[in-house]
Image (cartoon, rainbow, N blue to C red; front, side, top):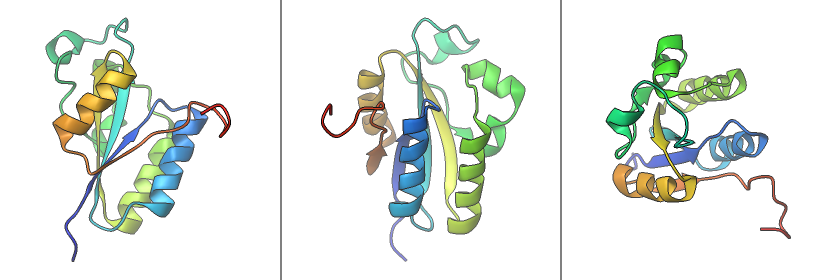
Length: 135
């Protein structure tokens, strides 16, 4: 069996990030991979643990805990039912491990930090709704 990979997926729960997740599930993710959902919240948001984890991001949050209201509030997450369903399906069908990590600040900088900090093999991001010409 091949070594499991760490695949980061940037998620802001927009249509384009959901499409990126769907693409990754159908084209990239293989059995045994580790998926890290990376959410970058505005530095202006004020969840309870922001000051504690502002520099390093939150600890890794298991998929099972993302649904819990107190965990979501603690990190300023608003989980989306469609995304959670996709993640549940891929964990069952491809036996992958899914966790989430929250960063606060500029998404461009924090996504680069996430790649380095989490030692990601791949980072999947949406297109911000831009077509091929505008990209």
